[in-house]
Image (tube, rainbow, N blue to C red; front, side, top):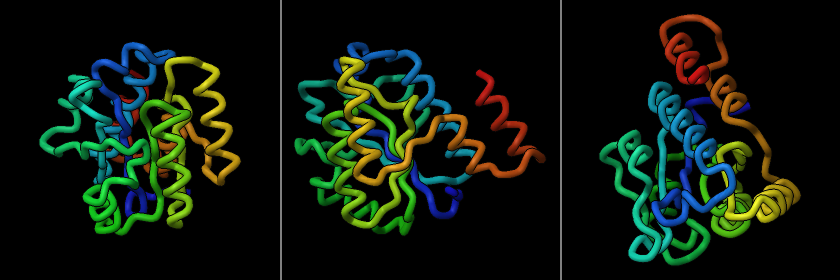
Length: 180
């Protein structure tokens, strides 16, 4: 089970030129937005990356607004783990569980998940918050991540697992996010 004290959210490459082209892009972006807002309420830290932003653009504006002042980790390697600054920050957070969302499932998301698993992290792939340009590649990527040891979850499942208790102001705020 994931907890706010042991978890971080990793948003991979949800960028302007790529995002509109992926399978179910609207739903994926909406779910990533829900996770960002819930994680902020629960004090779960977040990291986000951009793959070659000169070519693929920056993170889509609605998510960038939710993220706030945090700067993205720009990368050329497909795996986020190939970026030294990213790895340094990841390690400094001291979290064991990584909720992974983003694009493309069969390339950057897959390679990142496999490397995170190799480094000993628990990878929780949020299945309704990842995508690829083709549904087949999305499915294959998710299957390969699961076979490598990643755990599949969903936006609602992850959020409610982090909240744990159906009471209080935080729960009421989270419920509103989930229902949107």
